[in-house]
Amino acid sequence: MAGRRELVTLAVLAAVAGGVVAASRPDRPAPPRRTGVAAGGMEYLALGSGPRTLLSIPGGPGSDLPSGVRGRLTEREVRPYLDAGYTVWTVTRARHMPPGHSVADMADDHARFVREELGGTVDVVLGQSYGGMIALHLAAQHPDLARAVVVAGAAATLREWGKELDARWARLRAEGRHGEAGAVFLEYVLPDDRHARLRRVLGPVAARLFTGSTTPPGDLLVEAEAELAFDARELLDRITAPVLLLCGEEDEFFSLEAVRATAAALADSTLVTYPGRGHIATLSSSDLPRDALAWLARRERTTAATPAG
Image 1 (cartoon, rainbow, N blue to C red):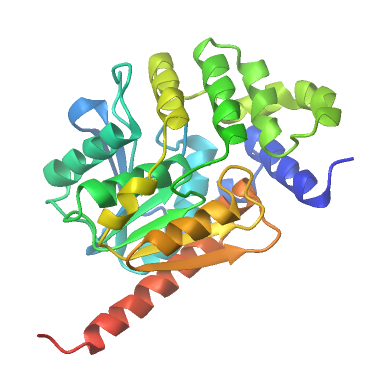
Image 2: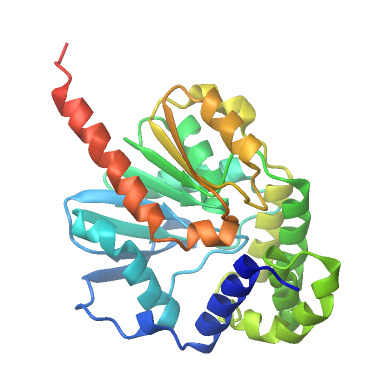
């Protein structure tokens, strides 16, 4: 049988897929929002109007702006950042990326976005999962763009199991085989072969989470290929910005050992781990914004207390 963690995750997935989530009925006024399309077809959603800027790079393969129930959930998830005075910019990958477009190239795309749309710098880059991979490249290749970097559920390397799973998931989505893609998606939380039949049965339900995706099929394949080639270990000594790494100790994609090695190789890093949590449970937790904001506040106090010169 599935363990408690897997059952809880499945329940959340089913609720979100069916649109029956309490967060779909917001109890606070919606924050100011702006949407648009930048160079290369990068779509963006800006929430809030605070003086500080947070660039949020979402997971993948595939990147979409949250809408409908997912959009209201996102507003709820980023509310702590909005309350702390941030405007949160969620930005997709470029559209119709050419074959061979790497994670490094995607980081360059985001650097261009920051320069052309956000005045050249941001206070914080927040990269989650696939977005965390891009965030590491962005910090290394464009050290002038971000004052601080938060990497959630990612590291400089990832497990081969995760690469292969994401590649299958992306290919099935690109081919329009959504039910099968949903079954593969459920391997994230029910990886054991004894759950294969359950995954097939629930696959069409899980597929509701991404069947409305606007990511072009070719981009799904490009992102999957880029993930297969990803390895950022040689870049880490080039990162000068402070980095906070947040990870579950049972993350199925990025091992705790890989996250610790990433933190150790950075010039200025802080590592926060969550015992007993896997990849999805970590990324969906309210602990993430709480811990990220606490770290940012500590750094701000330390900087303010440090004499100039």
